[in-house]
Image (cartoon, rainbow over all chains, first blue to last red; front, side, top):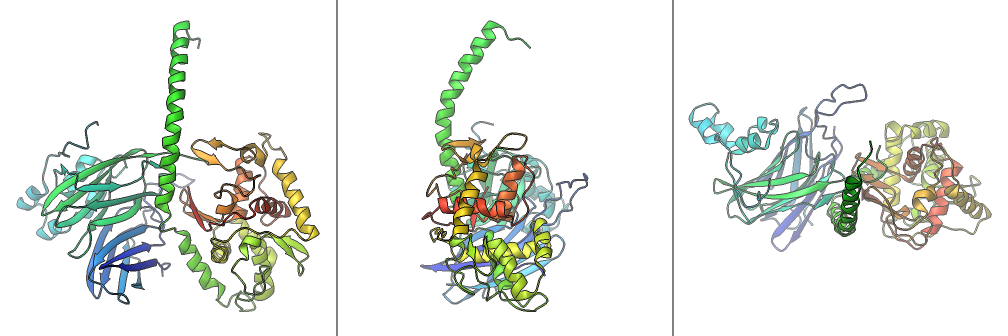
Length: 103
Length: 151
Length: 272
């Protein structure tokens, strides 16, 4: 089971800003190890954030996104105390889902 | 490549043509981009993969530093003031595979996203935005440098 | 390859122009780098290490199947706030001046039953296995002192001695390049490539030298503790690498830490 994300969600006015830190190696697949062999690609491909079951963001990523990825986005229509759920899936099929309560 | 800020990003070939020729399915067309778009190696091919010509627009801002101390982690944000922005694409021109990230923006979500990308060298960060079905772009150069003893 | 007179003159003129341009560019560069660092502040992956450390702090582990919650970092058992900014310091129960990382090993031994020598061995394989756990716990403990000012005690004879030892080590030139820490960090205004080098002999210092470690390094995606930072400094000077938690490394930390008195600790920072 992958390491947990750090998610923060804060409401200001009518807009919720969500900041996510994900723990992931984000290996591109084009790096080589000390013996010259290619290190296999291992990176988050899809991220989806939902609020009350409604999708508020979807992303498609390549290995070019940095290690331990950071993601920030904003959406309207939420209230303090609501939950935002973030899920990522990587190219090996591993996934991680975490949630945050909007402050 | 001077004057890139003001000139449109032109490319030949069209996503729509592929659909009309039955070479890709409608659902593939509906996905913002086929995942194979992430494997293409040139800027031209990356633009083809996401739909073709993208007119320059000052309604789009690329938020990236002028200089990055290290290319492994370069903060990149895109803010679009174009109404009905549905997709945001981040392209790093000189990366081995230029298309770095795609964001699908539903109603109610701001076309204002931030992430961090790897940049292999100083190059242009290109934001392409799909708004009302049309593509628009903005460019900012970010220099990548090195510090420290290295190694 | 010999250059002609004309070529030399052209080169000299070009060098002058580059020099002038370089001075202007330097300011723009400094601003650019400051902007880059600012943009990284929001969302420091060090938080991922801190989260992991927090879990480990309260987890029953080791042969004694106990938590670390009673660990005394100098301000009393379990007191974390302010502990990091007073380390290294003298501990009566071990009779030595210890930094946070060696003190953590002491606690893991006494509270959880681990063997210290196993942990020191694991620590040498930085960031892997048990070392990864120790790094996470270290990150958790230092975060409790974030924003506080350094205030290392110097009341005990051993603490004072370690300061003096650290100072000697700091200025001792050795190794194949005849470097000392002071070669790079003993003067104002130096840099390596585009990296400014903090002067670590001054008080309170520029706030991003000693005060910034432990830090998450974007260049390798690792969280570097002070032990790792010192180890790598020695490696960069082409010195033999010091043993983890050695008196030499602790003495250097005392020297730099005391020099940082009243500087704000910005840990865990995010760095190149």
